[in-house]
Image (cartoon, rainbow, N blue to C red; front, side):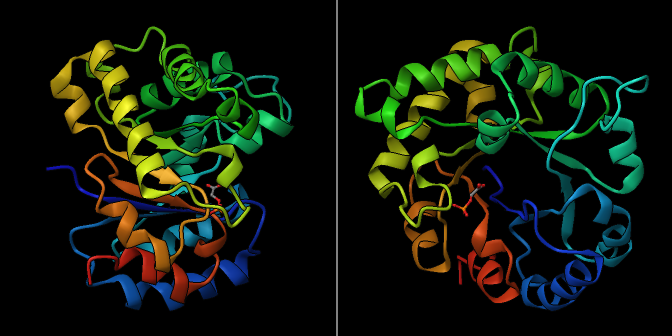
Length: 251
Ligand code: PGA
């Protein structure tokens, strides 16, 4: 019922020529993955060139961040309309690296999510607990707060297209994946919170992605969990073979 989403977060990697080379290698390897929604998120500057490169393929583009105003005196920011104009259809919001290094909070995540929805971009809203929170037994509390505050004043109808990504901070770029059971437990909890906010029907339709050291070797197990609907992939999305290996998890 929920179409799987495999999204690659390229972070601060890939110049224009490197990005084009990666897409050229990736596109033929994933063209048979008809049942999967495939997204890659390059740096802002590369979006317009990739827009041409992905046209006619089954790959969509995401930005890695967005600002909440459409225009104005906001040096260094990029608006939803500008991202659409550059070829993005999706945008990652509230990635833990933005929360950790750039002062992103649940309040800014909320402003950005509202602005993205208003601007017809599909938000991929990231949440996840730190190792400290997990060890203190606060995982569910953290996830619930991040969801409720990040989604404040967003109605069920507005929320419908949103994709949620559960990324335990301790599993990002560390090679440590959450076990299938740990991930499933968190995803089921997230779906329960969404059901409380928006009703069971909306919650059942929401794609919840797992992120944190996803690789071709562990994607199958994760994707076999009832509430895991896809993956947000960092390191393994930077090479065509490994990202294609994840996209083609059903083969
Ligand atoms: P990783 O990153 O796959 O390199 O752990 C995931 C992410 O940050 O989205």
